[in-house]
Structures are given as C-alpha cells and as structure tokens.
Image 1 (spheres, rainbow, N blue to C red):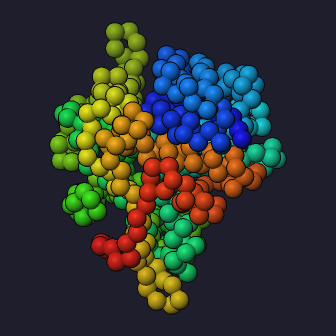
Image 2 (image 1 turned 60 degrees about the vertical axis):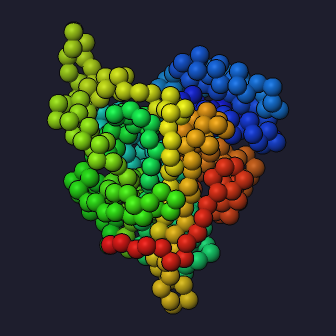
Image 3 (image 1 turned 60 degrees about the horizontal axis):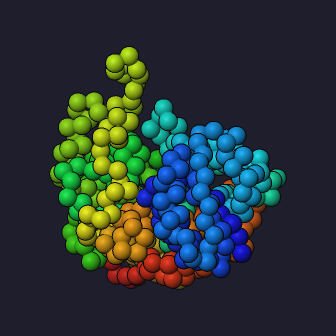
Length: 399
C-alpha cells in the first residue's frame, strides 16, 4: 500500500521498524534513517527476508536540507519521526517542502529551554492544510494512546467528561543502580521541570514532584505516583469540551528519586553549558553519555508497565467512572522485537498512527492530535498489534 521513512533507530525506532514489517500489506517498503548508519543496518539485517522491503540511510535530522534530500531520494508516502523532540520542526519543514505526510510521538522542545508545548507545531496547521498533507502529532502512548482512550471514552461512554487522570506506571527492574527507560536527556528534563495540571480553564503549576499519591495498578500493585506536566494535557484541554481538570501521573521508586536528587545537587542535570578542558558542554548531555543506553535495557528488564486513563463525568444525567488501560510485559516485548516495554508502548502506536494515515482512516489536510480522529479503528489496531486494552467501570478514585 505504501512506503514509510522512519527517522530514528533507537529503542522506539526499532519497535516501529519491526511492527511495520509485521504489517506488510500496509507498509510495503520502509527506510530506516539515523545519524548512525550502523544502527539502521543492524535493524535491516533482522528484518530482511520478510515481505516488507527494507532500506537504510544516514541523515542528520537537525538539518532540514538533508531530510529533504532523503525524502526526495526515496519518495516515502509518510515520515515517522521517532528522533529527538528538538528535531520535530526541521522534519516538519522537510515534509512541507516535499508534501509528505508526517507522524511523531512527542511534541517539540527547544534544546535550550526545558519546556515542551504544542504551540510551535500547531502554528503549522494552515501550511499543512494548504499543502494538502497530514501531520499527526503525539502518536506514542502518552501522548498518543492516552488521547485515543479519551476520544473512545467520550464517544462511547460519556456525554461529558469532567475529570481525567492519566497514570503511567513502570514496575520494570533493569538491575542498574540508576538508568532511564527512554532518552536520559529528555527524561530528566521532563522530571526535573515544574509540574502542572489543567483545572478551571487554566494551568496550575507545582514544584517538581511536589504532589504524590499512591495507586493500586492492576497486575502491578501499589506504587507511588507523582504529578508531572505532560503534553497531552494541553491538547486534551483544547479538544475535550467541558473538561474541568486533567492531571498526569508517573511512578518513580525512592531509589530512583534519591539518585536523581544527588545528580541535581551536584549540577549534573543542568542544561547550562560549562567549560571543560577548553570546550563548552552541557552537564546533562555528559550525564546522558555515561548512563546506560535505554536501547540496551531490553534483555535485562523484567516486570510490567501499566498505562491508562481514569475518567469521571456524566452519561444520561448520571455520574459515571471509567478506567481503560494497557499492561505490557518487558520480557515479552523483548522476545518479540528486541526492546523493553517502554520503547514498545511508544513504538507500536507510532506505527498505528502511520497506518491510520496511509489507509485513509485518519487522512485530512492539517495538523492534528490523535483525539481529533475517530478512535475506533486505532483501538482495534491496538488489540491486533500487541497492546490490548482493558476496561474497569468501578475504578479506584483519588483526589
């Protein structure tokens, strides 16, 4: 049916490539591109021999002209961006220049400021409309599936959704004293930034990890959850009418937080450049270089993730509560695609988002978040592609 260019060959890119190859009727050809060509070639060796044709290429996604040249060379129908959030705009520019559909998993973040929001990408809406191409933003799990879950709940179970709590739990154990489950630079910037939530039509900011609760996750058990700022809050506040409050929660162990606090105290999480041996470096980028690569955690990570949404609202004038979630096993993910569950839960929805656009189910000109489309075909594809979801109509509720 189509040809996809995958930019990024880390843990998530690996999952996207494998899942595309598992759906050859949709993805007849894929091109895996990264700054490091050897990673792409390793993936190609794993995938060769199937129905999907696999190519590789080297590209610096910071340079729009390089991405344009790559697109012109291979003529893909869609670009799946699983590179760094800093590179979203350069890749979107390349897609505009070549009139190619676009999908990503995380919104743009300026390298010099630890602040991620959609305004930079939403600003491209009219340009993409005029070009007649689709940009699907945030088609990972969170953001991504959490938005689809919200659209599904709105369509099938509520007249109005008033409260949304997004809960992301990782009960996996990789055996290292300290490591991050996705890009350390992005992960640590996200966690050490102030938290925030949407309530009463405005943002309410909190200190980093200031608000804590405990929640009993199905198939995992009780875990501490902390309120963070997260990008899907911004798009859901815009697209879900009459919502009163949206919060995002993530689990962290005390061991993880203790290590993080020590690193903060000695300045290793700073993004302010310092001079070292005659060169200017960011301490956080140096820390990223010495921490374990998240792409290598797969073979040693055991346990499960649980990511889902709790909704409260009304249906036919009566209060209703609803919890929809996915549980993913790290070891099962590694057996299938050679990656742990955090990469798997981001990579599978990226492939599905591209599938929705390529098959025409989610195809229209402009820039969109996932909750703006019909959720049903995406929800069906989750069940068929390794991320089955479960429902609970009497979930635990917390304030």
